[in-house]
Amino acid sequence: MKNPQIVRNESGQAVTEYILMVATVLSFYLILARFLSTYGLAQKLATPITTTFATTYQYGKSDVLGFDNGGPKDHPRALSDGNFRIFINPKGL
Amino acid sequence: MEFALTLMLLMAFVFFFMQISLIFGIGNYVHYATFMSARAYLSAGSNQDDQTTRAKSVIISTLKAGQTLENRDRFPVAQATGGSSGLPGLDIDDPHFQAGNRSLSWLQGVRYTFRSRLFLLPLAGKSVPSGTNGATGGGSSPNSVQLTSESWLGREPTDGECQKQLGPMNGIYDNGC
Image 1 (cartoon, rainbow over the protein chains, first blue to last red):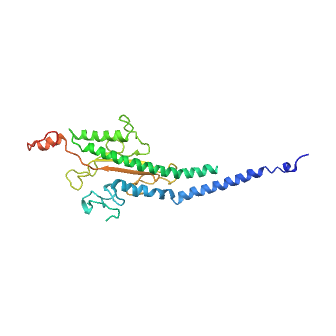
Image 2 (image 1 turned 60 degrees about the vertical axis):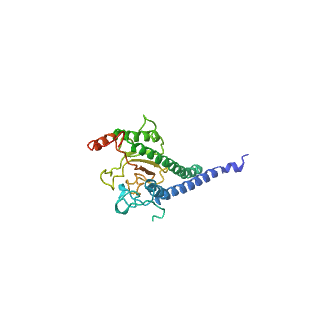
Image 3 (image 1 turned 135 degrees about the vertical axis):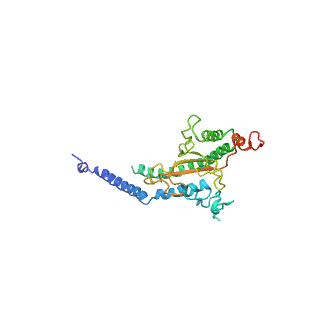
């Protein structure tokens, strides 16, 4: 005599639940990936490196413009237009 | 699967911070290499080619894979970009340098430019035109940062230049001016 529970064959429930869960996780991941791209989160994370740090690395101060990018402005070694300064302090004074 | 997806996202951020640490470390080393190269360029020599060759030699020994592999970077994290001296990344003298102009005569020395990837995954979106995302760090992609190290130490006159300048004046010179 067959077991009535086996006859009803409920083993598909786990698979269905797993598929639903994976679909939910995948949707969440896709939404997150789109959020990163749309709002430029990674770009915002990188901006201090690509701008402020890069300028400080080259000139020693974050808001300096060199000859290659429209300056010189506040350049520590340029002589023209009041650019010359002996010391640079963080407050820009 | 959810573990793989989460891990991928988290590892992207972990590698981002590791990459920044590497860039900071190698950036300091590039400053040192540029300064040493500028020192080699500064010292007097028989002619300017001799001084330039010395500057290149220092960069090759510090930042390139070897004397015979001068187009290959020693550190793959810092990829040389640009360069007008025949060596990737290296510029001898700024293009604005003018010997007779006091405002521009100090732009003599060595400059080294390199580029590093920030994200191992393309999280930061598509490429943008060069120079639109920052003063110095502008580049072709927001996924990377371009750094420039400069050392304007100047250049001593060569023997040939000494003879040319001081010869007609009956000046005294030995192995320099």
